[in-house]
Length: 172
Image (tube, rainbow, N blue to C red; front, top):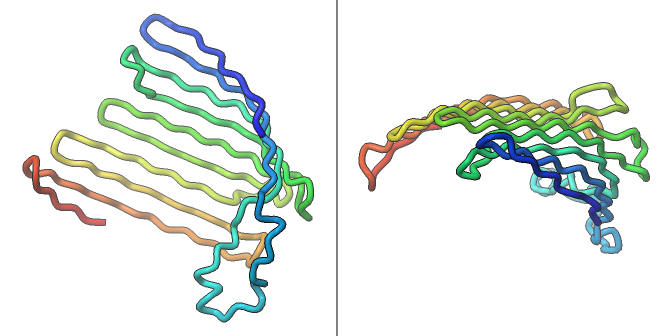
C-alpha cells in the first residue's frame, strides 16, 4: 500500500519532480508452507532465494530532473526502510542516485544498516557511450551479515563495439 504525491515545477527548459512517499509492504507468501532452508542439500541452498521481501514500512523522498525533451537526466531517491517484526528492526537507509548525460551515465545504490552501522549493499556503475561503442564499469558489494556473514565484492567491465548497424562485438 502506498501513499504518495508528485510535486512538479518547471525551471526554464527543465522540469523538477519531487515524490514523497510512505509504503507499507506485507508479503502475500507468509501464509505458504515453503521448504525449510535447513533441510536443503548444499546444491539446493546455492539455488535457493533467501533474500525475499519482508514486511516493512518505507518513508522516502525521490526527485527527478527532466530536460526539455522529457528525458530524465538526474534522479535521487532517499528512503528509510523499517522492518517492524525483525530482530534487527531499526532498518536500512537507501540512497540511490542516477545521472544520464549525453555520453556519460553514473549510477549508485547504497543500503546502510542502522542496526549494524555498516554498509549492507552498494552498487556503482559508470558508463560512457558514443555512436559506435559503449564502455561500462560496475562495482558490486554486498555484506550479508543477517544470514551468513559473507561479503561479496566484484568489478565488472563491459565493452561493446558496433561496427555496422547489423553487427557488433563485445566482451565482459
